[in-house]
Length: 406
Ligand code: SR1
Ligand code: MG
Image 1: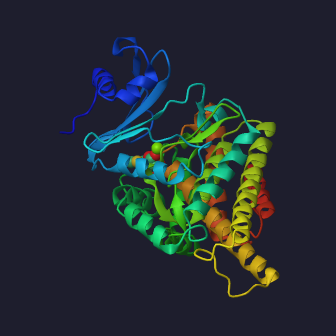
Image 2: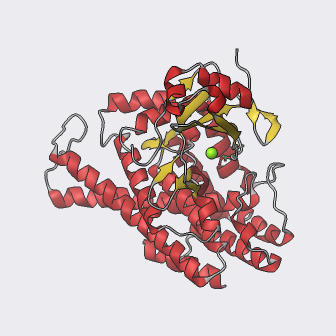
Image 3: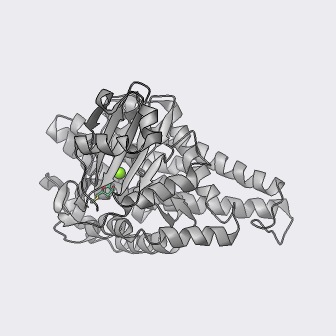
């Protein structure tokens, strides 16, 4: 029966799995096991032996950071399923599922020694230009491969049926990102009363609320591809050259712009939390690099699929290239608009919703921190309202700088 593992339990569990024990080498007494739980939901352990290391993740019957918030255990099943679905397409950008135990809800992957959580690196002022490009590639390759552009609809729909069962975590996403911040809810919180008038302005803006309603509907009714579902900078580990996307337990079918929006939203939160001009400029470069890398990789994959002339997936009634290219560019533009919307919702929920982020703690001067948080919220409001339409990434980045300086 399920039981929560402690350090000794982890050692015993690994010892019972010859292939995992073999990766570590030596005997169980040689292994160094430690707990490194960091996220909101699960227990995470690292075990290192003379020959290698593994990372073991176990679901708890509640939210890790709030034992009163009860929760089913099946999230590690969905994370293992997500890894198995996407790993063949992004073996250089995520970790392999080495083992999944359906009774203990344990997932084991190789450990990433020498890697740092991207959020931690950004907070330390370490900006690795390659990482944004790699995340762009990751979003393009994982979403394209699981979409109707790459596979016959029968395979896509089978996978959609599987991930449609990830309802506990999808409910968290819908509630925490797309509902709670827009009305009074006990889960919402913010320490600084100076944010309160902006929260009120968000809740009193008909265009904000209408856009949120559309985004929520779109998130649940546009199953374009298998998403990571929680692609913030804490779900990315890097050593500057090698980058791995982890923690896919929120995986679900949805609009591709959701993953892109959460990543860009977290870069923007980090941008507003960055004290110096050079660091801020590095963030704008990362956003630009991410988007360029995503679009190039996605369109290349699409083009290559056409050259393969696989009529079980791609069928064009027209052979007219310029018409096809026009349709492709519309497809990308729609992802861009989705990205802007979901990016705004991520910024808002990380400042005034349930689950905040650490980025702003680097601004030790309280008035500066308040000013920047207000600017981030107002930027998100502008993105949702689009009183002046944001048609391109240049429009978006210009708005970002305007909000920083006002
Ligand atoms: C109760 S879970 C809160 C948040 O933590 C996860 O990492 C997701 O971002 C979720 O929204
Ligand atoms: Mg996580």
